[in-house]
Image (tube, rainbow, N blue to C red; front, side):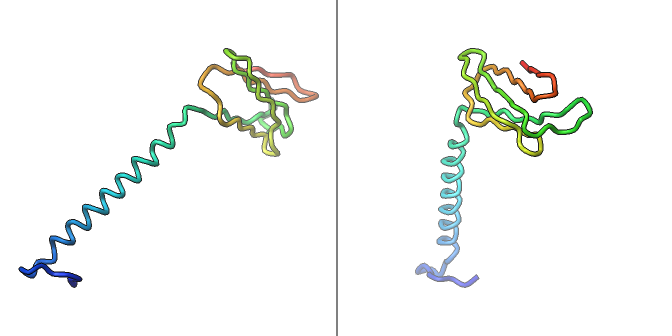
Length: 108
């Protein structure tokens, strides 16, 4: 490997070692800083609504309710029968799904 700068003794490895240590330190700081972003204190409830035969139910009304606060998050399933409720505070939730022609189902 060619030396960009050499010391008086002709040694170029010392500069390379400091550069590698500097890069490793920067990488460590970036990882430490970004890992703190993942600790948001919220969660997501996701699921798929299916009929008794296992077919997905698009457009089903879904309600996710925090049992401690009573805060309710109403939504509908997408074309694949999937629902997603992000940014929920920690706690216990009831999930209810319903659609005309089907019995309502509650999961606690």
